[in-house]
Image (tube, rainbow, N blue to C red; front, side, top):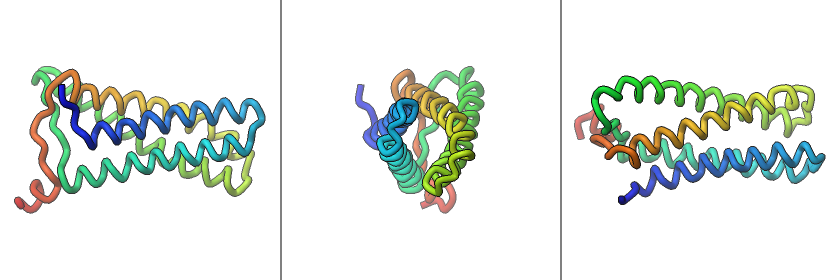
Length: 153
């Protein structure tokens, strides 16, 4: 089985970000504030690298359609929409949480940090599931770039 390079790399970064969030959560429970900050920044950088690769691939190469059985396509699409909503919510919460931490607004940071982390864990899990459904369990469908889809080039 040959896995596609860019989706595999971007999925690696989303997994890495979730692992770093878990490590950061553990560090703050141990009172290691500086290590927590560095780890959470690394988690954010990893998530941004995922996003850059994902957006670049989407714009220039395209998105891959679900290649599994037609009777599963509706379920996949609903699952994908759920993942996208989670990812968007997690990213917004992530920016707010990191900003609050960096600005020393610790009451807010402590209140939303655990919520953000849980959302991000589910985002990573559902992201891996989307990757597996598109490239491992089933052969991916057609890939069409945004430029080709919109402009016909």
